[in-house]
Amino acid sequence: MNYLDELTQKLCPKGVIERPLWELTAWDKKFNSVDRKKQSKIISYHYFLAGDLKNIITDNGDIKILTTNITNLYTKSELVSDFISEGEIVC
Image (tube, rainbow, N blue to C red; front, side, top):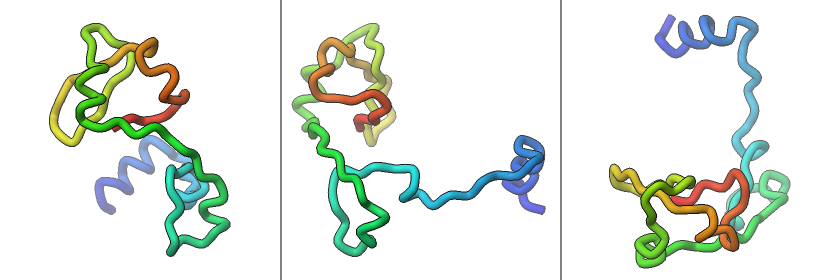
């Protein structure tokens, strides 16, 4: 038994419900090679460019900004409330 199986058995003794990723996510663009039923909902998001991110970085912010580098950047919800939705990940 591999480590992942051991963890699953330990943390989820009744098993894990497996669902395809497309059932759980919403995307901001349509992928042509993906069946239409798998992408029934497309949500338009605001795109933040690197320059935009520099302008919204604050100390003691309440929203973590994810980047492709190791950083510890935050912004305040008041600065981006018109651009992001609850549960959205900005990176």
